[in-house]
Length: 403
Image (tube, rainbow, N blue to C red; front, side, top):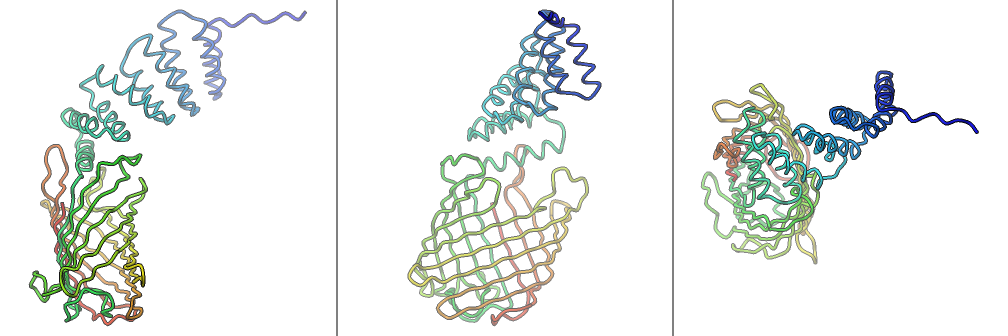
């Protein structure tokens, strides 16, 4: 019978582990460190080897195993750093409940550590526990001193409190039509108008804090010249529901009941799908300079009526650079805008481009929350590039307030 080699001692296994690590063989190093931990009762060695094993397993993307190694190290010597390593390993493994439990222990063990409170807030937000998220974001704000981290946390608080939002805007165009109607089929696709809209997020959990459903109501009217009041008989109301079905994409699906208030409005149903993408609406948190790149893309398709559907599509892209000074944000930009509609009067299209300038004033912020209100003035020179619309080239001025 062939004699079997005796099992390695803890010291021998640890030696093999570190030799393998120096040779670049992390898998073999992890194997021998696990053996070394099993072979010794020395707490100091077990603690250090468990920490080392956890880091090696993390490097090998064995995150669930790494979390257990860090928990072993914590059970031997209950240091917050070991428990935090376990929490981050659980996050890397995708085990959100285990990570939340770990960080809940951490804020009890190290209540003055803002990083632990902030991470627990994110985990609570992920689970839809907004009260927990708010509590720990606020605690982190009181403990943090890094201005960049404070600003990011203030923006997170703003997003948490976005339950009711809305806007009011006035659009003046030098190429607006003379008639009072807001009906489709005017052969002119853009006209001077006012819009007021209010939204309220419904208390429904859709599996992610970035998926939501909201009710909304709005009122539109056409304006004449500089007078912002509605022209007679032009008021169009509507109410409905909006759904943001994707957590990672700003795509909104809406259904709206149009209600005629003025004689030139209509009673009908409207279904809309819109999407927007962009960056630079406010200064990026990590950006150090006073100016930054801005770009945005918006697209929208809507159908009105079920028996004979009127279709509208529009899209707009802007690119420019923003400057912040004395609280104001100035954004000179170039735009390209397209509109198309197919209704009872036929098809009409328009492609415009030109320069523009947006001046924005965010306000209403606090030590706990980034500004959630904004006044914005956008002036653009729109030049016709293509299409069949009767629009004349000219200035477009938009004054808006959002909250």
